Amino acid sequence: MTPPQRQRRSPKEQPPPPPPPAKTGKQKNPERLFVVAGPDGGERDGDLDLVTLIVARADPPPSAPPEQSALLRLCTAPLSVAELSAYLNLPFSMMTVVLTDMLTAGLVTARAPIVRQAVADRSILEAVMHGLQRL
Image (tube, rainbow, N blue to C red):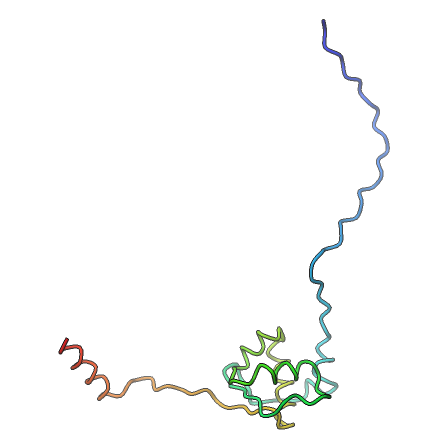
């Protein structure tokens, strides 16, 4: 007995492939940066850098934009501008604009980080060395 032969079909016109499915998950609708910064957002120059520490001085007022409210909630303990930028997912340039507004309004204070001495005090090093020698 011979196996059955397959018959070839003539190619038919196939419909175009369906469009790719929409991405599922969290869709982002980023705000335009000028909405966050306000109309004169790019015209200010602050003395803030990435390691400047920010501390909240007041609770967020009811009329505060969401970025300022979030900053005031985060800054109950001192945080650097770099940390705030990362937590709020805003670029550093926008953080300086928002923080400059908050500084002028008196909602936050900015202070330089505590810089440790590059070289330890000689008396401390000698005390450590003598303590190690006694072991």
